Length: 372
Image 1 (spheres, rainbow, N blue to C red):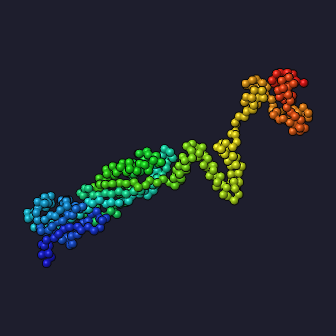
Image 2: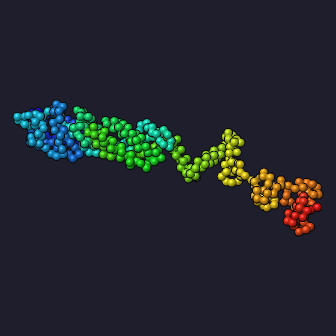
Image 3: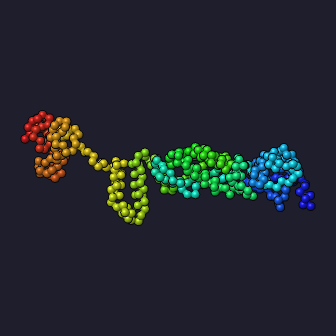
């Protein structure tokens, strides 16, 4: 009965229902042979490989093959060199390979990757994304990946593929010398560059990487916080003074929330002075340290820097700003009209021209008449 059963037509096919299987070996129960009238069915997205004693006999493209037509399998016929063609049984192995695209394959860096950045020096980054691949060279894939295994799944090669992808991306990012602040704007360029390198590497396995995408490149939390601060500074001011203002105001705000105020936060008088200087410099409430002050010349009215003994315009001697009351001899301001001590009137008139003269003047500033 076993002999008769083997003589009936057999259909050799792979009805693949598992989307993650890459290679499947056709089961030969009890080394059941293929006889002359067997039929081979290869569906779209598949390839069939006949192997005899470890040697590749032939690869079949999508289609239906009647194995009694030896013209369809010239390599296999030459390998066997049969006198009776398919009257003798075939006792080799048949592998089906899926050539469809395996999409949405995840990749991501397990550990942070170091890179040198022109703005922040040495920093670390993480990245993740997706890629797709397919088997482009079944014979190479058989030699390099699955050999004589009964089945090869995506999970069997995913870790190796992820390592290659992450290593390649790290090299691409380093070679591009793109600043950390500009990485997000170059995802497409980096993806294209990485894809070209990946194609060269995966071709050794008979695999073609169809697409490669970078979804995100993230920096350490402390670097991201620094970027947020730089963004805020850019809004406030384009100079480092704006950054100093923001940091000072932030420290004062945080200290004010403490029960003891500025002193309990350890800021003390230094922070108070720093805050005073900050507001003085930026709001104009008090003159800046080292600013020059001026007084008016009593003779010509020109502005004279305080401390000068003579006016640079008229050459007149600069007075100290005070005068003596003729009644009580008290020091009073030069522009005072009455003495604040005795109430005496401080403005007199020249008997010659009637011009106003100050107490202590020996000559009239208008006509030059000597005053008593």
